[in-house]
Length: 202
Image 1 (cartoon, rainbow, N blue to C red):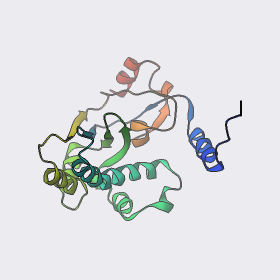
Image 2: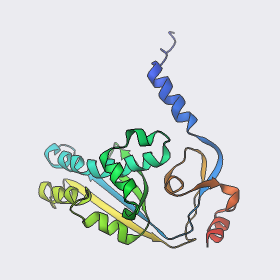
Image 3: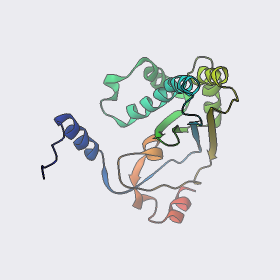
């Protein structure tokens, strides 16, 4: 039996880079103020209807790229070197209130989701309603291209988190999620058990 071929150098480099980002041990997130978790996603109900869902995905792209690029900027020491105009705007205007984001893709049924963190509901609402931000054009494009014909589903969920009313744990993970958006700390600082972490933040 022939041995499997070695991956190309670029693949090996990517794997090594990904592994180097892993933080061995157990960590949690630390934030002492209220914050907002906002989930937004799209589900393709009729995969054959390319003319319906592809424009929606393309319209959502700038919004997701804007927020996820900013999240990567916060997590990467070299982010400032690749910072685009939109990222520059966000970093120069912290009053926008965006803290960070993670994005996810599902092959079947085809769908995408973004989980983002915000300083307040007011900041999130301002971003969603402003004509100068990428969310409103994406929403308008969805209504124009799809409306309510059922070919594409779009959804969001919003959670307003009061101080201390959260807990998280990350075991042998890169800096991720709420910890990436706020502060990444050893789990022992806030308690080994979930109940202890909730109490310690309260």
